[in-house]
Image (cartoon, rainbow, N blue to C red):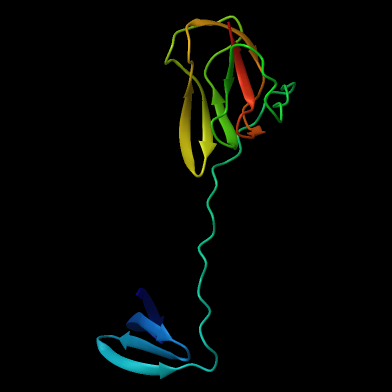
Length: 141
């Protein structure tokens, strides 16, 4: 049901639109119910998809590698998605389970954690980059 408030010639109207089937709609105006026949069937509204604002990438951002390279120590993307943030830098010491970056996949934010203790050797992606499943993201030695 959709509710609307209208003011026509100084008079207030409270309108509720109920079920719509084909050309017929159930409408209530100021508590009085009406069955309304429309000229054309109503079109169903499609809600616009809301996407988060794009995250700007650094001026010289490394491109995400499109496929897995098989590099030892690589932390891989578990799903295709967009990198929202990178929470480490080259040279950082990381521990197993520590969040390295955030990946948006299927409208959800996923923390990508280190699977081992070590040092970040290389970051192979950038914030805002689209990555595929299995893409090497960060090398931890």
